[in-house]
Image (cartoon, rainbow, N blue to C red; front, side, top):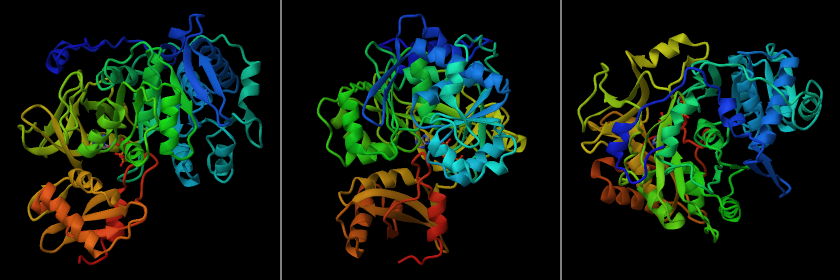
Length: 540
Ligand SMILES: Nc1ncnc2c1ncn2[C@@H]1O[C@H](COP(=O)(O)OP(=O)(O)OP(=O)(O)O)[C@@H](O)[C@H]1O
């Protein structure tokens, strides 16, 4: 735990990792709190509006039953178990059972279509899948092409090719001796978002959870505190939902509010947080942008808010502080090495436009093309030095991609940033997204932030399009707010808006209006897809 009232520098200097040689996420996040006291672990708001509390004791019994049931069906240590479920208790139970069994959990988004599911289930060679009727419907078309998949369990009862999850659990013993795993043993494969290409399966060890803990304590402001209740609209299949929220909360004995949200509804999200007294939230930038367009519900009691996955920007930061009465703390990381940079309003002033400073315990640098650390002020690749408990073991079945991810001991994120003199990192963009125009290197984030501050703009994406004279020209793709009819005058106004607020060289020479932006399942803008879509058109 980081001491309250300390400065970032002293906290960082005093920090030491304490990673035991044997560690199991399932034991640490469940059995450790199951002491017969019925301490609350999950508060499940069901689709019918009923609240279903689940204690750590119940979670332990249920995950033990599932671990026994899986073993009885021939699923063993090292097997991959897909978890295709929304935010429901069965998803947490499946994860915990997989870890206790020494198996490898593979979280999968409910929103995935058949192709996305097939790609991931084939790639990891999943032997079992825990899902529900929605998942089964998608699986029907691809099942025949998944020869490794021998067991499907459905939370909605038996169906063709699937066994009844609850029926099997009811027949199994609630006593189970967890497999004694090393902290370095594999626990989890999380697929990257696929923002830049085919998603890759990042294999993580049990220690990945311990690697997240100083990060959670830092940006979540001395998490845990009595009365904390955590909620995120992010899917638990995403590293942000699973490793920034669900598992760290359970590790600390903090309850998590669980609710299946088919589509993010900002009015409902505000009400949910107010009515249930949510105190800690992880709200990705896309969710914050949608919340900004809705009236806040009375009675919000949030004390810590994290956000990450994309640039947050000053505009959302200001709105967040005014709306929630507390700062929004930014997280930076990636599926392969998550939560390595952050800010925390109790430890350091939050600087708009900066994603924060390295989280204690992580060696983060900005490197040149040869892998040498650059001095402050120079743009380069963000890298993290190994060993680091939060770092992945490698890409599943892809040693070439794993090797290409490193120069020496530095993991290359593929992101461009500048380390400022004051120790804060300024994110420029992914390698592919940084725009080179007339000799300048321009990050899309700052311009997008500026554009979304304009009253006519709901969402904005900024990309570079090829240009004979300037190498690339800055292009803004705008989703106008409802009721706004875009025209040339609005385009000119937006250009002037950026010129005045950001810089003359960074203003969008081309402005396009669209109804929606292409987003990944985690809500990130797919700028590569936009580049392909718009690179044929002529600049005005
Ligand atoms: N706070 C942040 N500010 C800006 N960008 C961020 C922030 N946090 C994360 N990101 C971006 O998200 C990336 C990590 O995303 P993730 O691991 O989900 O996969 P992806 O990179 O989107 O997918 P793929 O690797 O398949 O293209 C980071 O490398 C960075 O580009």
